[in-house]
Image (tube, rainbow, N blue to C red; front, top):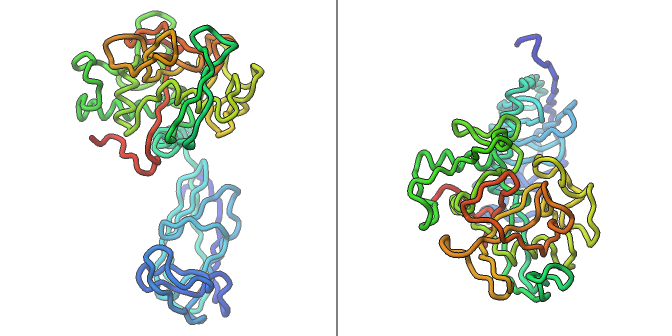
Length: 390
């Protein structure tokens, strides 16, 4: 072992447990151990059998750093002691932020004491960055917030004329991305487009359209992608320089869709119908209204009551609704006629533009800007989604 690597020592003590402290019933099918109060396996329904006390050894973890995650045979444990059965084999993995995962096998054979001394090898800065990028990219599959079925208020009698009147919108419920789609997430979509073609794209988009975020004007160059890669250090920034067709194709690829205007608005306002996601008063410390986009989630104080982030400021977001001056007459944008509505305000907006009921109707579906990104919704629980499948 290289002495320059971190030699963080973890002692794992295996000692005979004369009386089982944590579990003393075993499933004969899946071999998991459960507390004595449980009669049947929660996973497969088989009747649990008693384990003789002399067949159990307690595994104890000592000197683990804060935030360490312990998985045994793929199951996360919530304490530093667990009972193991003599004669069984256990795959143990310890995960700590900033370190490579530690993996080892334990096979208790008899009443004895075993000391295991694995090293956690610290990641290099680049390895740590790549790990974070992967975590960000994979979060699109699970990091969604449920909006319950019910009737919600949308619109405003105090805003622009095209926001009126206040009206009720009934939804069967849906899930919405907690944050705007990030560059790391969008990159996976581009990789699949490259491999599998344009099967997720809108039928009215240009043939073999380039979905790479880019623009030719000078200030946009630092946000434009090169060689299929986002600008360095912006993996957790919202993807920008994407038009409506880019957003549609990504959502379809992810097994999701773009939100309607009403869905977007009730996600931002919740059951209270506030002017802003956090309340009725604008606050500069709750949203990004400044000089440029920033990483998603930078303003946690601006979250909705449901925990949805960045629904005001940072970047405004494409919806699937076409604009009509009378909101009750708005319709689904089909890719040819009308202008898709953009919601939420951006880093380049003011308090008025960041109101949840505000309607931006000046964007062509081909428009690419450093102020516009998007997020997705799903009619199904995120664990049922299959990104990249069609």
